[in-house]
Image 1 (cartoon, rainbow, N blue to C red):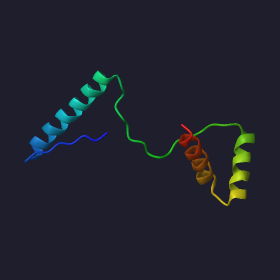
Image 2 (cartoon, rainbow, N blue to C red; image 1 turned 180 degrees about the horizontal axis):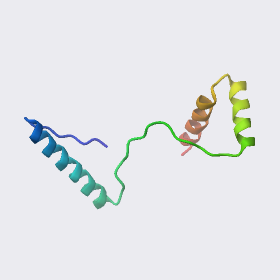
Image 3 (cartoon, rainbow, N blue to C red; image 1 turned 180 degrees about the vertical axis):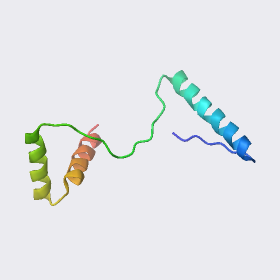
Length: 81
């Protein structure tokens, strides 16, 4: 989602920003959805050592880092939805 606002001074920018965010939150509530949160692109996955080892081996066989291999698996599976 994109929130836009403008102003001619620092004070008017702050006020316009606050109003835009409030409007966005109100809109989300009226549609019954949660506001989007920014994603850093990083997350931790806890798994058992056997699965971790298999991921490392498969990534090496594919010539990829473990992170790139997991990203490829996730991307492929998300595309199926």
